[in-house]
Length: 228
Image 1 (cartoon, rainbow, N blue to C red):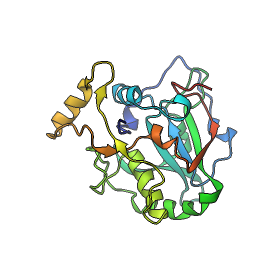
Image 2: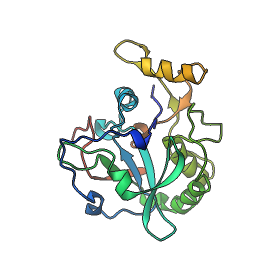
Image 3: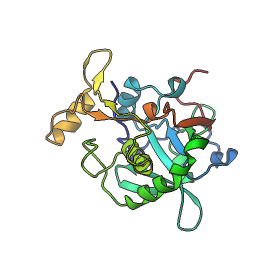
Image 4: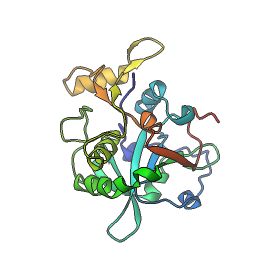
C-alpha cells in the first residue's frame, strides 16, 4: 500500500536556517530534458505523513517529483504539479526547497533508460499541454487534474502508446504505527467534504523511483531514509 504524493505549497515550504545552503548546486551534474527529479521535500506534516508510508530507491523518502524540460528561452526548467497547478519552475527555485545537513539539495535524478529514450519528446510535449491545469486536490487519476506523480505518470503513459511505465498501487493514508488515518488527512478530506480515498489507485515518487524504465544516475544531496 502506498500513499499519494505532492501536497506541496512552495510558498509555505519551510527553510532550515541552521544549514549553510550551497548556491546553484544543480550545476554539479549535467541535467537533460526528460530527467525526472525526485525530491525529499521539507513541507511539514503532509510530507512527513507521505514519507512515513512510502519507500523509494534504496529506502529514500521522496515526497515530490518533477521533470526537466526546455523553457521558452532554451533554459532548463522543471515542469511539475504543485498546489498552484501545473507550472514551469526554475532550477533555482526547485533545488532551493530542501537541503540535507551538508547544504546540498535533497534531489535525486532518474534518467530514462537508453532503450526508452524515444519516449521523452512525446512525454514532454504532453506535459506542456497541461500547463495551467488545476492541482488534483482529491488525488483522483481520472479527473483531468494533476498531482505531481500523476503528471509524470500520464506523460510517459501517453508517450508509450498508453502503456504505463510506472505502476499504480493502492494508496493508504493510515499511520503504520496505529493503523488509523493520519489526523492531518482526516481534516484535509473533511474540509473537501469527501471520504478519505483509502485503497484507491494512485502512485507516489518513491514507487516511481524504482521503475524498471529508469536508472537513478545522480544524488545532489542525501534524502531521508537512503541507505547505500
